[in-house]
Image 1: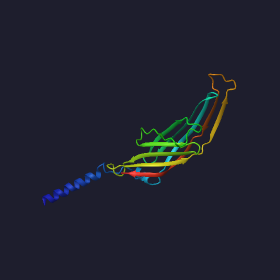
Image 2: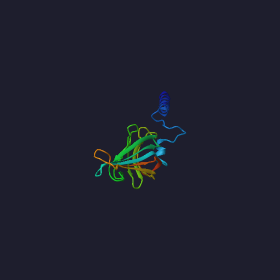
Image 3: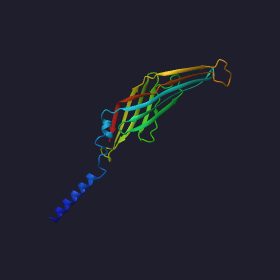
Image 4: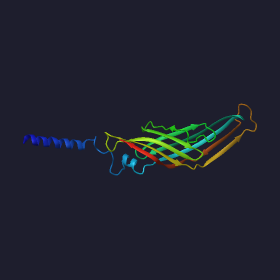
Length: 194
């Protein structure tokens, strides 16, 4: 009888201790959607302040030094992190053709974010991984997703031609500046590993 009541008491203490343990507590508030729930249901990124600009500079009639630049911030609604993405290219004439993948700055969020941009079509593609620990911290879920968005950029061009050019001066220049764009980036592929 003593053994049975001691065993019952120990089991009750053990169960009480584990249910109150922070290791097993769910890491979400009742009024918020969890990282895993957001990842599994209707997930999409938000790209903000997408910027494209370029400059074509001729130091002589035959020597060109031209670069294009793309940058934006990518918000992941599941883990609430933002990655800053930027790239520079001197691949003439549109600079970005969707053939080179660039890494984003993920130092504060962990995971990995990459993108490519096709200037002629306006397509932005992203690939990102992130980890959710809200279901079971001992077995976190790592998600990897790929998605895309199409931008219609409104751009202005300025031209300059030096009519009295001499060596050491700029012969001609052309600059392209586009207004910043915000857009949802919809995933077309997503996977999860626990």
